[in-house]
Amino acid sequence: MSSVVIGETTLTLCAQRLLFAGRPILFRTNAPKIARYARDFFAQTDDSNLPSAQALATITIYARETDEPCESAPSFRGRGHFAAGRFTLADSFWFNLRTREVHGTCPLSLADDRMRWRAHIFPALLGILSATIDVAPVHAACLARGKHGLLLAGQSGAGKSTLTVAMAKRGYALLSDDWTYLSATGARTNKEEGVEAWGIPVPVKLLPDASRFFPELLDYLPQQSLNGEIAYEVSPGQCFGVSRVLRCPVTVVALLERRKKPGSRIVPITANEAIHHLAREVEPLGGSLARCYEMQIDLIRRLGNASCYRVSFNNPPDNVAEVLDDTLTNLS
Image 1 (cartoon, rainbow, N blue to C red):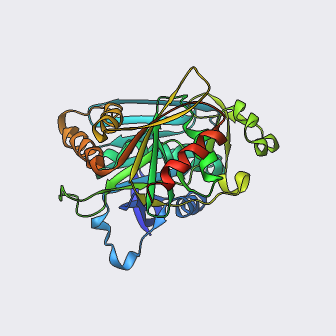
Image 2 (image 1 turned 30 degrees about the vertical axis):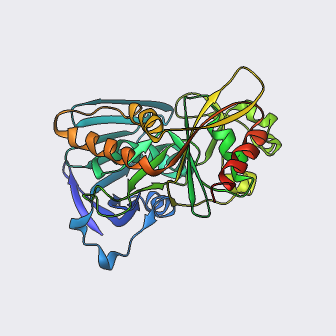
Image 3 (image 1 turned 60 degrees about the vertical axis):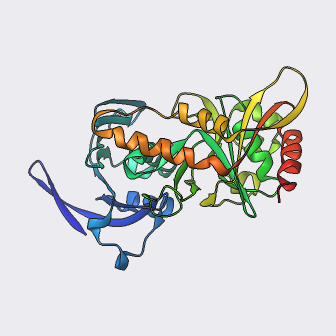
């Protein structure tokens, strides 16, 4: 337990050391429910081996009584190394990326909404913090089987999530269907180390037309997601009965693209082509955060030893998954 002063009020906070992409984070809150959500969401560390001074970032959240309406109103803005965001009309989150600190306030009613913390708030906080703790978020799905970790990258609408579910139903362990977090497998200063992919336990997000391919979705109702889209957000284990994995090495990268003609086509490409695609989606950072941007690009460049493919398709996801699975089986 620890105490902080906000204004003239002294708050007793529950403090716990947690892990994100293998990096230690100190998480503090005065709300027992939020503390429990965090323990369920993040991996935990052995406190006896991790003094608080070693935490690479700190997240502090204060839940308070308020009459403000808790209506959804997501917004984010940033300038320099400062950023601000909110998820409802009654909360606010402030980021100092130079000191790697997040301070948030929220109504007690939001502390009752476990799904919102799991699907929206925790992922957004980590996405903004990630670059400052030597983690590179990439817009790619990720699956694992055996010794292989597969990144599925592509433009929005390329079919990452539906193909991810189809591959998971073929026996692959699901790490992520949208955002994957890369970190070095060894010492962060060792340029020869490889890359490890990490996921967070968020729901799988599928647009309404995915129910054509996955009838399991008909037992659920699509809802408005954080970016305003109407989509299914479901637990992959509960909805599809697939397994999840927290981390895996990256050995294969597949760039997805839609084609006009029916069918599926998989061709090898150079690692440089795959690296270029992933790197160009990383948001440039300047000033005091320039080193963070360089570290993200360096992590992506370490994918140079991966087997890389371009997957062009105009087929149902089950058919594409079968062809891609055959290709990966031949790598074993």
